Amino acid sequence: MNAPVTTLPSAKDFKSDTKPVWCPGCGDHGVLTSLARALADLTCRREEVAIVSGIGCSSRMPAYTNCYGFHGVHGRALAVATGLKVSRPDLTVIATGGDGDGYSIGGNHFLHACRRNVDLTYIVMDNHVYGMTKGQSSPTTEPDWDNALTPGGTGLRPFQPLVIALASGANFVGRAFSGDVIGTAHIIAEAVKSPGFSFVEILSPCITFRPEQRDWKELARPSPVPVTNDAARAARRIMTDDGFNIGILYAGNRKPYQPEIGRAQRSLQDLAREFAL
Ligand SMILES: Cc1ncc(C[n+]2csc(CCOP(=O)(O)OP(=O)(O)O)c2C)c(N)n1
Ligand code: SF4
Image (cartoon, rainbow, N blue to C red):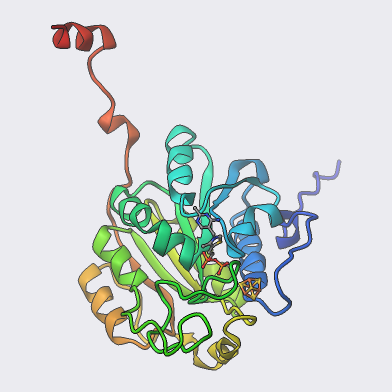
């Protein structure tokens, strides 16, 4: 008798039938393919994965994948993802979104998700602009980006997401480029496998509001140094590079958040007796 034929999943098994409405040439198309490829390479099952997002062009990711999905509220992807993972630890939970969603309105959630170190993967498609709302400056926009909404630029120092993630306790930090689909899939797969909070910053050009970001394909190149487990060394390297070194930049060994640690040892009745006036 012949053994049953088992076929390994492919990237297209993780894409939904919904056609992305992203502009042709938007970096997010590449990220979708990389994410689907990473899930296939990890031989995930669709029903064991949940993709959670906020609001923005990049936050449409759950609609274009066919795992469980939650397209939520602007800046709140990590709050939803954290609650989901703590209550359903059996699921692989991946939060996705943009730099506006994650670093501006969602910035506080970002810090505390790194600090809590719940076993999640957070993918930010960073295009240094608010794409969906037509091109406002975001926390990672260059201070001298001159445009109709901020003539002469904001003059503000850009947010440093990777260094902030390291300082706040993320256990895995990587930077990818959307045009490098295979390399990005590898970094996402490693992030998902890594225990605790994994942060992957993907340079993903917005060709509509930042057409000059087409040049990123010339600038992005593999990091010249190997991954480190020393957060201070990783932070120093990131602070002094030009923002285009691609790869896994930090892999730590912090223990992930264990929900049972904070669980009350006493019954509700005991607590009620203790606090009775
Ligand atoms: C509470 C709230 N405030 C503001 C908005 C408007 N809004 C929708 S998307 C967005 C910014 C999206 O930018 P980003 O996260 O960088 O994603 P991109 O569109 O560039 O992928 C904003 C400000 C909103 N939907 N909800
Ligand atoms: S506006 Fe920018 S971020 Fe949004 S889909 Fe178009 S290219 Fe992508």
